[in-house]
Length: 130
Image 1 (tube, helix red, strand yellow):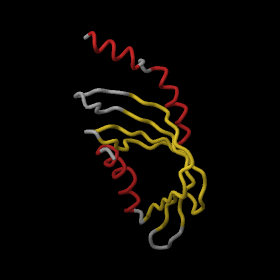
Image 2 (image 1 turned 120 degrees about the horizontal axis):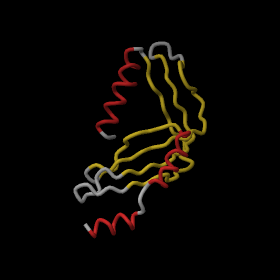
Image 3 (image 1 turned 90 degrees about the vertical axis):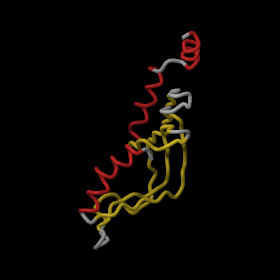
Image 4 (image 1 turned 60 degrees about the horizontal axis):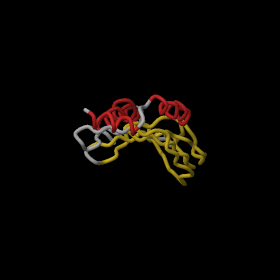
C-alpha cells in the first residue's frame, strides 16, 4: 500500500473499529475476473513513478464486521458472495502499490476516463520534440 492509503485506512476505519471493539473479517475464496480499466503512464524521474493502473476485480468472497467480544456480525455477511471492487495501483520506486480500493459501481467512471487521456504516441512524440 502507498503510505497515504495506509494512513487513510488507519484514521478512517481501523482506529474506529478498534475503539468500537470490532474486527473486520475478509476472505477471498476465488478470484473470478480481473479486468483492466485504465492505465495512466507518467515518467517522473525517468522511472515511470506515479504511473497508475486501475483494474476491476470480481471475486467470490465474504467481508464483514464482527463484535470482538460477542462474535455478532454488525455489518456485512458471513456468506460468500460475488463482489466487484476497483483497485488502483500506483508505481512507487519500481513497485506497484495499492493506492485505493473502490466499490465496483465506480468501474464505468474509470473506463470513461480513458477518452480524456492523450494517446501514448502523441505524448512520446511531443516529449521527443521538447
